[in-house]
Length: 613
Ligand SMILES: [Fe+2]
Image (cartoon, rainbow, N blue to C red; front, top):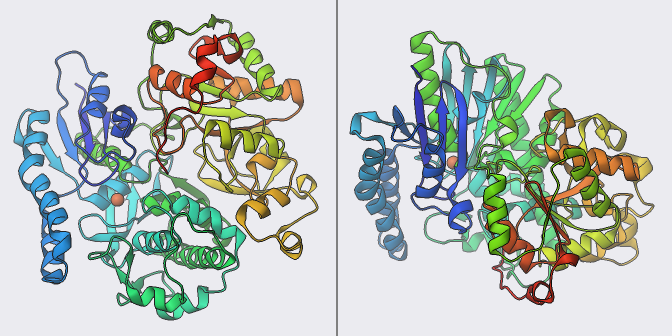
C-alpha cells in the first residue's frame, strides 16, 4: 500500500504544493504559475489541485504536511510586536493580518485538505528546507546548510543528513541575525525590489570592487571564523521599516537609498561587490564548518541564499574537501512544500524499513503540469493562430534549430513545467547566444526590459568544458563558470573603465566575447548543462543547432515577459507569443511561425502593459 504525502507552503511568499508517494516526487508546482500573480503567497488551491490530479479520482493523500509550525511563528510575531510597541504601530495591521491567517484560516484549510486533523503534520520551516536539500539529492550522507531569511525563528541552520537516521539538527542562528535579510537590506538600499531584486544585486557585483567589505565586516556584521555571525542591529531594522535598514545604515555609507529609477553609479557597484564578498566569506566559512562537524564530503543547500550562484562557486573553489555540492533548485519557500512532504514520507519509510529510491530525485525539476497535444491544439485554435504539426522529433528539432540559426527568437514549451525559479528548457525562450544583437532584441522586444544583465546559456553537457572552465555539471542552472580565454574579447573591465565608461549598460556593451548575450562583464556565465540522452526536446534542439552552426549552446531565458511568472498553460504561452516579438512558438508538436500569422498578430506586439520586476 502506497503512502502519499501532500506538502504545502503558504501565507508568506511563493506558495506551493508537492506530492510525494513512497519517496518518489510525483508533482510539485508554485501557485503563481496558475494565478499569474508573481510570488503569490495565498493558499495554493490551484497548485494543490494540480498535484492531487496525480492521485486516483476521489482519493486523498495519507498525510498533509505543512512547511512550518504556525504556533511557533505566531509566538515570534507576537514577540516582535511587543518589542516594537508603541513606535512600530504602523506594522501592526500587517502583523494582525498574519496572525489572523495563521491562527484562524490555516488550521481549517489544512484539516479540510487532509480530511481529519490527525492527518496534518506540521514540519518546522528549516527542517522542511533541509529535507528539500537532502532527500532528493544523490547523497547517502551529507552536511546540510539552510541559508534563509527567516522561518519561525531560525535563519541559518546546520544539519547532518543520513539515509538511515534522517536529519539531525546541529546548530542554528536566530532572527534577526540572518544572511538572507542582510543581503535583502542591501538589495533594497541599492534600489532593487526585496525578494526578487537579489539577483540584480548579485548581477551588479562583478561590475564593482569590494571596497566596502572590510568596513562592513568591522561594523555591520560580526562574522566569526566558524561562519557564525551576528548583525549589529543598530544598522538594520527588519521590523519597523520595509527597507530593512535603519537611518544609521545610510549614514554609514554616506548616501541615501537609491531610488529605483535613479542611475546606477560606481558607488552602487562597489556596495554590491562588497556585500557579495561578505556573503561569500560567510557561506564558505559555514560550508567548511558544516563539513568539519559532520565529517561529510557532500554538502546540500537550501534556503533563498542557496540561489546565490556566485557564493556557490566560492564553495567549489575554496573548499577542496568538498566532493559533492547539491542544491535544491526550488531553494526558496516554494521548496518548503516539497521538503515537508519528503520529511514525512521518509520518516514513514524508515519506520517501515523501506528503502528510499536512490539518485537525484528532482527529475530535472520537471514536476509541474504537462499538457496533451489535444489541449494545446485546442488552445491554438481558440486563439485563431495558424500552425503546423510536426510529429517527427528529429525534423521538429531541426526546424527549430534552423529558425534559431537565422537569428529568430523561439518560445519553447514542452512537457512538464519546471518547479523553482529557473526555466530549464521546458518553458524557455531560446536564441542564438552569439552577438550583442540578440541580447538587445530579446531585452527590448520580448522581455521589455532595458537591462545590463546577460542571459544564461544552456549548453550540451559533453561540450561545456570546451567553452567554460572549470568543468561543471549544472543541470539546475545554479552554478557559475568562466568563459575560456580564447572566447573572450580584448576589452576587459579595467580597459572599459579606462575608456571612461561607467554605467552598467556602457560597460556591458563594451566588453565583448564570442558569446556576448550570455556572458557577464567578468566573462562568467550562469550555465545550465543538458544531456540529450535524457530525451528532452531542448537537448535535441541544441544538438540540431550544433549540427547546423558548430555552436553547442543557446541563450536560455524564462518564457515570460517582465514582471510575470513563467508561463504554465498553453494559453499563457500563446498570450506571451502574441504580446511580444517572439518569432516562433514551438509548443507541443506544433510550430507557430509569426510570419505565417495575419496582420492582427503583429498589431498586438508591445501593447500589453507589464509590471516592473
Ligand atoms: Fe524559508
